[in-house]
Amino acid sequence: MKATAVAPANIAFIKYWGRIDAAKKLPANPSISMNLSACITTTTVEFSDKFASDEVTAGFDKQRIFDHIDRIRAIAGITQKAHVETKNSFPTSTGIASSASGFAALTLATASALGVSFSEKELTALSQLGSGSAARSIPDGFVKWEGEVARSLYPSGYWDLRDIVVIVGSTGKDVSSNAGHDTVRTSPYFQERLRALPERISRCERALQQKNFQELGQVIEEDCLDMHHVMQTQHPPLFYWTDETKTIMDEVKHWRDQGLPVYFTVDAGPNVHLICEAGNETSVMEKIGNTYQVIVNKPAKGAHLL
Ligand code: DP6
Image 1 (cartoon, rainbow, N blue to C red):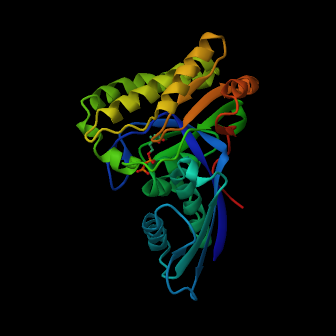
Image 2 (image 1 turned 90 degrees about the vertical axis):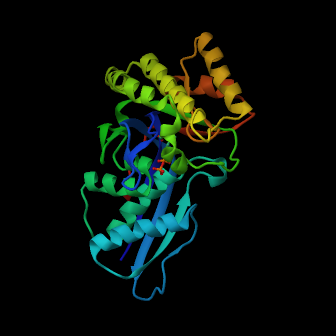
Image 3 (image 1 turned 135 degrees about the vertical axis):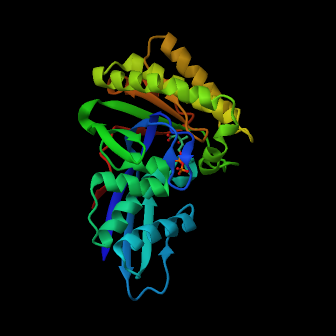
């Protein structure tokens, strides 16, 4: 009763911010993302009669991991305790979100160790209960998550994009994204965001379908700024950017003015994700220079067993 699964983190082109049901982590809006090849979690789960209690070697929030194992254990109808070993390909101190890759890998490894076979759809729904964005780390490549289902729009080989993560910092967040979702309705701009999203989502899907990079980049930046506008106007307000974050965002605009097609997006932390096509990776790296640590990601397949 032992299995190992790997799962990628993902970067949202259209962000998930806010829920209509906190317990089920039902998102307020559909989101679209790309799996990240260099931000991977590998998790081994073993169930045994000889274990006296659940244990996890590492992990950000052990109780959240135990609660998730409980859910899957209840479905399988067994009582054996679990030992969980988990490691990330990226240093956790970088502030790169590990909950998406973490809960996707944990769901698949736990289900497999218990011998329960779930469809991809069921795996996305289960992962979502651990962490919303984890649902998007189950299917391959470019993924759309809506309601309780995430599905692949295109496989990882569809479009050779890059997400170059510029590591700005890892200062412990005052408010986690988990808590931030709960207070989203205190922003007067949240309803406006919801009204604008259907059209923005269509634009993003069309840009992906047509491989129109400029349109994709514009919609990615627009949605990032819109989400942060909501975050910054919630109570309490959530400011995830540092001065360096802002400096890099300004630089990206400047590089674009010089003719380099690159766009930024930022999640619930200060790191900046630079999105470009493969052919411009070298130029973007030259622009970044040696000041920052970077993680270069290609589109990746979703969670799978080792
Ligand atoms: C800003 O998936 O971390 O990264 O469901 O509470 O685990 P929980 O929240 P989480 O929220 C992610 C928010 C975001 C945007 C996104 O990835 O879509």
